[in-house]
Length: 64
Image (cartoon, rainbow, N blue to C red):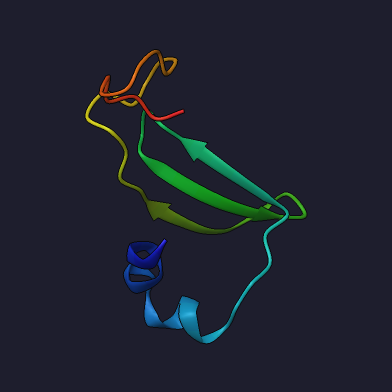
């Protein structure tokens, strides 16, 4: 979480927004925040080395 806060553009930190929906696209490694059907912001995110698919065991590189 700390990395995400520092990765936000200064304009996003200056004016807090409230999102009604957070959509994570693991294949594209992006997080999109929505409110009332409109995209508020998009961010690149870091995931495991093999994020797509179900988490099966520790160390498989998948993100649940």
